Structures are given as structure tokens and as C-alpha cells.
Length: 137
Image (cartoon, rainbow, N blue to C red):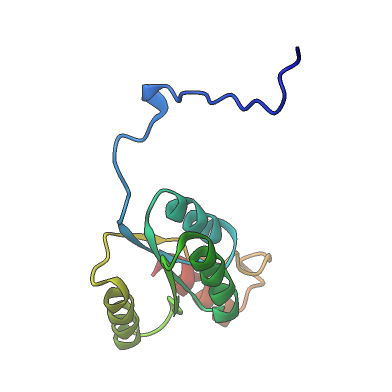
């Protein structure tokens, strides 16, 4: 008699299990609208985190947060953030993020740009400054 629709559940060896619990932790992720930032959001919400997804592209953030909230029940908020903004603007964004859940447990500062693929001798000063401000400051 052949087995039908049998799902075998494997136990994860203890050494491969996470040594800590992320349930209920609030994590803010910059650069969350695409790439690694988006994947961090999805993986962390699956681990039980509440997500503050921050980036410049709010349309993508809204789509991401809508997907998370529909699947996991109101565990993500979208915050518009340009990491190159001046201090007061950053302070206001962080306060808005803080107010969403009452605290922030962790930050994943993932925002970055690849920049123009040119020789450093051919790049304009504006391109240089934009890449530097986004990736390093």
C-alpha cells in the first residue's frame, strides 16, 4: 500500500536553531523597498518581529507592508526615509518610527546605492557626494 500525501517533518538539530527569540521585537530596516532590505523584512516578520520598513520609494513600501499585514496581521508599517536628509528630518522620521510601536529594538541600516559605474576620474562631484552620503553617512 503506497503512502499518499505524507509530509515528513524533520527536526532541526539544536545547533542549527536560533539561540534567541525574536518574537515581538521591533526592527527598523532602511532600504526596505527592494533587494536585501525587502528580504530582511519578510524573514524577520516570519521570525515574529514587528517591522518598520523605511525607504524613499513609498509605493514599494506600501505594497510590502500591505502584503505583510495581510499575511501576518498588522505587523509592519511603512516610513518614508531618505538617509541623506539633514539631522532634523532624520530625527522626525525616527520619532515617527518610534511612535508606530512605542520603541525600536534593532536597526538594520541597509540603505545604499551602487552608484554610477564609472572610473573615479570620470564621476561628477554630485554623483560622488550622493553615493558617499547614502552609503557612508
